Image 1: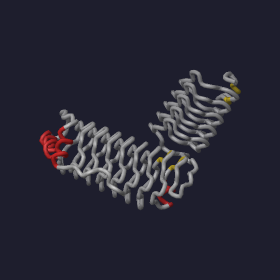
Image 2: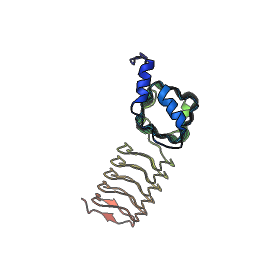
Image 3: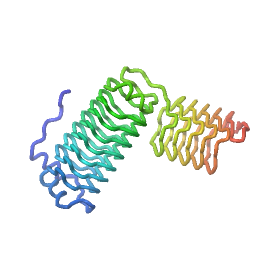
Image 4: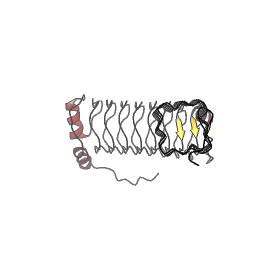
Length: 317
């Protein structure tokens, strides 16, 4: 791949490091923070819980650094060296990690929503239960990476190398795996829904029994999805298309379904306690024996809808 970004000079790197970093007191070592600010070389430093939101850290050396719960939201880490770094529970939402080295880094439970990981090295990285929703992983190297339970809704994995990766219980909804390198047995471990496969074909949508608690499924295409027995507690499905979906015995406690399309969906025995169905379309939906305790139904559309007691509701026809 052609490198369209010119290399940074030492002076340029120092300028990047001195601008845009909020040096707030936290659990980190202040001397280490000053070292990062002055030199851009903070290998093995303790930067845990530091506020580096929006920081300009292109080319920085943070190998082996402790960045536990650090705030790196929208940080610029192009080409940064984070080999072996601990980013457990760190916030990297929107961060630019293009061509970054994250070899064997610990990113478990980190937030990487909308992060740019194009051409990044994540070989052997711990990405268990990480949030990579809407992340760009084009041409990223994920060989041997552990992605158990990772959230990859709307993630772009085009051309990524996932050889030997663990995708057990990973969630890939409306994702793109075009030209990705991945074994079939690895794909079989994941929950796939309308995802573009390496051969260009689109996967079916089988999310039965999947753990989607707190998942951000805003505007997701879940048409005819099998979500039977799935855990969707407090999930955000605002504007999602769930027409014809199978939600039998699904747990939707506290879920947000504002404006969702549930036409023809089967919610038999589903738990809809505290669910928000404002403006949701429930035409021809089946709610037999569903638990609607404290459900918010303002302006929801009911037409030929089978209610929890078996009666037909045509109030919205």
